[in-house]
Amino acid sequence: MKPPPQFIFLDAGNVLVSFDYAKGFRQISEEAGIPSSQVKKFYTRNNLQAKLENGTLDWQKVHSEFCSHFSSNIPLKLFSRAAGDIFSLNIEMMPVLAALQRNTIRFGLLSNSCQPHWDHLCSSRYSLLPHAFTPIVLSHEVSAAKPDKEIYLYAQKTVHVSADKIFFCDDLTCNVDAARDAGWDAEIFTSARQLIHDLNDRGIRLGM
Image (cartoon, rainbow, N blue to C red):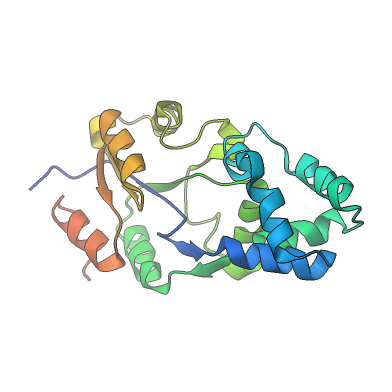
């Protein structure tokens, strides 16, 4: 059995929520009256999502360029809502979060995210965000994205815990490997049940 961590960081995408970029393209297409294939081509060219997530590109600039490129007058608020409403809550994780809170275990969020996605996740529809997590480390706010080592170092500094006392769960192997390279204890997320098992192996009993 591994020693229990002093802090837990969880990813958001495909851990707390699932997402569908194609849904966002369709919704922008419907609102702007532009073929979905053209919206996808605009959005995926020059790796826009990665630039939004690492903070090197501003969402308002994307909107401005979209309107200029397609001669569109879609309002920023509508454009953002269409792009951001792509998530479905992973219901199986809700009892896990509740059990962590009951056991007064410190846990936070470490996520690659962009402004419209995070704004949507923080709407009343997903009331667990941001209130359940302290701290919340978002790539677009700290200008570093997983698996870059800078975001792990930043996250560690915010919780004042040594690297070997942090447990991290993410759905991508590259992000887990990077966390381990940073000295963290980390596991791939496959299901809430597996996460419960991984925490149990580290002496965290959630009673589930």
